[in-house]
Each structure stands twice: as C-alpha cells, then as structure tokens.
Image 1 (spheres, rainbow, N blue to C red):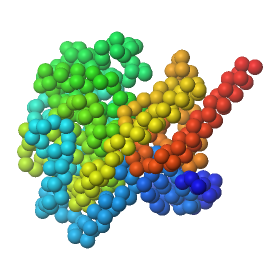
Image 2 (cartoon, rainbow, N blue to C red; image 1 turned 120 degrees about the vertical axis):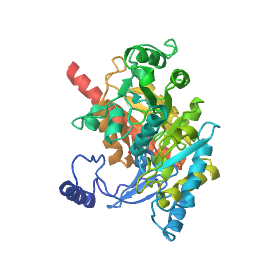
Image 3 (cartoon, rainbow, N blue to C red; image 1 turned 135 degrees about the vertical axis):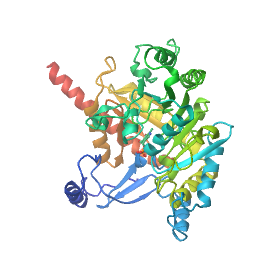
Image 4 (cartoon, rainbow, N blue to C red; image 1 turned 180 degrees about the vertical axis):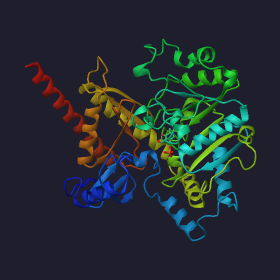
Length: 455
Ligand SMILES: Cc1ncc(COP(=O)(O)O)c(C=O)c1O
C-alpha cells in the first residue's frame, strides 16, 4: 500500500468547517493555497483533520529539508523545553546562540574570519544584512534583481520584484533600491542565448553603475543564488563569479540570500558552494531551523562589526528553542547523507521531468540545482506564453490526489519541488506519478479545447 490515503473527497468535512471559521477570523490577505487543516506530519508526509494522508512536496515552503519532526530536532527542542524558553539574548545570553554562530561561521563558504547574527525570519535577516552593509560601506544603494523575492517587510518588498500580490498597494517603499535583470535564460531580458551571450546580464552591472546609479553610492548587490519564488532559476556557472568581480572592483558588497536555496536544498549545504563563490554576507533561514523560526546573517567579521553596540537585535531573535533546533539541523547534515540525497532526488526528478517534456506540450522548461527543481508550464513551446491557469489545475489535481505542491514564478506558471530530503524512493515515485497524471490531464484538456476551436 502506498503512502497517500484520501479517505474522503478533499477538503473533507472537518477541513471545510475550519475553512469557514478561518474566513471569519483571519484576513483574506493571508493566502491559503490548499484548504486542508493538518493534524500530524512526519518525514515527507502530512495528515489532515479528516484522516487524509499526503506526500508533501512543499515542506512548509522549503523549511523542512531535514523532514517533518526530524528526530534529532524534536529531541533537542524537548530537552530545551525542560531548561528555559526565553531570556532575550540581549539581556542574558546562552551558549547555544554562540555555538550556532560558530557553526555557521565555519560552515559557510570562505575561510576568512566571520561573525553571525541570528534573527527569526528571512525578511528580518535580509533587513539586517542591508543595515550592516550600509554601515560598513557608508553607502545607501542596494541593487536587487528582476524576479527576486526577499520577504514581505517594507524594505524586503522594495527588494522584491513581483508586483501582485506582494507589492501592489503597499508602497511607498524605502528608496535607494535599483533593479537589474537576472540570468533567467529561458526568458532572457536581452533576448540573448547562453553561452554566446557571455553572461551579458552579469556584465551589464558595469553599465548600471554608469547609467543608473554610481557605484560609490551602492552598498551591496543582493541576489538569490537560485531564484526561489521567482521560479527556481539557477544561473549559468559564470554568472555569479562575473558579477562578484565587478562588485568587488567597485567596493560593493555581495549579499547571497540563501533563505530558500540553503541548507542542503541544492545538493550542497549552500548553493554558493555549487557556484564556487564566497559572498561577503550570506543570509540563511527556513530549513536552518528545522521547522522553527530561525534566520542568520553570516559575514566577514569586519563587515558584521560595522553597526555599533545596540544597533542590532530583536526580542526573540535567536530564541533558545530555535538555536537548539538549528544545532540539531547541523547535526542531521553531519550524521546523514542528506546532501547526496538532495542530488539523487534532483537527478531523479530531472529524469522523469525531461521524459514528460518530450511528450507533453505544456512543459516549456525543466531546471534546477540539486533538489531545488521545477518545471515551467507554457501554452506553447514555440511562443513560451506562460500557462498560469493550467498550472493551478495541475496543483489542484495533485492535491486532490494526495500530493501537496506549490507554484512559483513571476507568471505563476512554475511548479517547484521543495520536498523534505528524507523522502523515500517509493514516496517520490508515488508523488511523481500523481504529478504526471495531473500534467497529462491538463494536456488532454488543452488538446480538447484546441480540437474544438479547430473544428
Ligand atoms: C529567497 C527568500 N528570501 C527571503 C524570504 C523571506 O523569508 P521569511 O518568509 O522567513 O521572511 C523568502 C521566503 O520565501 C525567500 O524565499
């Protein structure tokens, strides 16, 4: 018997009732992709209030690389529960904060001296990386990318690219943010083709310093090594080295936002390692906490020390429970083969998805790094017109058949894989069979519509 069990049609009666209660109690601005209510989760599976069991390809939006309720994480949190819950590290500190900082300093790319500041969320960590970069350089400007996502606070929204639903109506945003194209080769902003383009998009930063903002007014370039919400886009190997060389030539810092790409997702602890790059500041969150809110800013010691005492902090930032969870996540990576597992998952997904791409007209692009994989759905392979409605239909089909998937991309036409790395091959097959059937179903519907239109 497989893992998936759909006992009732979904959402079941108990979830339906909760959906109604939520509608009166919670603002509609908080989206709710899949209308089920979870009671339990383990490894790569979720169970809902109606007794349905799902395979989870979303992993709490990439927070559960070590799996739901990873045993080491659960027992570390349990042990901390019996000691103390909170003191605020700015008032009275605890060893786990320092130990986690030491481990992050040692594990992140770059052999130079580093320091780490802990926060609760990815957005908060990016905000702090900006504060630190500005105090270190004495410059205001930040350059971000098209299709970037850095969070939902006002500064991180300024850095974020996608307008609806993230930014529309929430401005004005903080000034001094500039935007340049990313290496989105499938939809190149310059209509060039890799490799003959010679990563023009990275080289274009020189032009930006001439025509848009002077480099001496720019503190940092902030980039996701693999775009997350923007559609799981992994740039060609030369992109980041070229970009970072230009940054450093002008005294501009390079900040890597590894909130989604970090902690094993891409088949290395950090995606930066896959590119052989050493950012000046690296921001991690999501899977660092193994399910608890935890984020970190790790950077060159002299940069991290730029803000004066009291300039950085937050009441709950680096909470003791979260620190213990983070340390247990590190242990899990040291004690098991999660990294090679990520590569195996990625290779397997690629193999299956490339077969689909051969057969199914809807799959325009298959891409990713390690287990950070995605498919981009299009109306036609020739025009590459995005297929957001069909993408929704596929994710709906998956959910109704027991697989939780989430979308991405500025056009909402990407299905992304953020499955816990502890998924078994059987579960992976079971879930991919469902995804395949969903894609086939949508293609058949499209074919039927094309035939009707043609007749
Ligand atoms: C690359 C990236 N940066 C920052 C964030 C914001 O993190 P959080 O939602 O924890 O604030 C996200 C969230 O999805 C992200 O993917």
